[in-house]
Length: 149
Image (cartoon, rainbow, N blue to C red):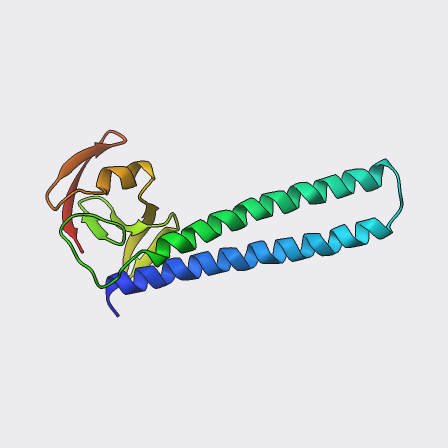
């Protein structure tokens, strides 16, 4: 398996794990909301229901973000390699390695660390459309792109 396919697989696993966690939260809150309807009446009851509703809304927003990540991943072609940074590129710089995809944090392949970043992140915007040997500044650090896969 090549580096791009492995990093892509790790991003998919990240999204699937987040989706599972949010689904568990929603399910748990639905059960709690259902049991709240059977419990005692009064202010305490209303406050409990309101808190559960807020939690459900927050989980729904997280779920929408997960769907968006899945949509972005579906657009990545792990077999395409260009010398210009694009969605799905693996970018080696003189400071850090990146996988231009979704914001999934640090990934590891072959003993090397890569940061899965979104094209809409500040560093992602700088990298997108760049080519090898390009130099730029980010957070007052000079960065040079060594290789793009």
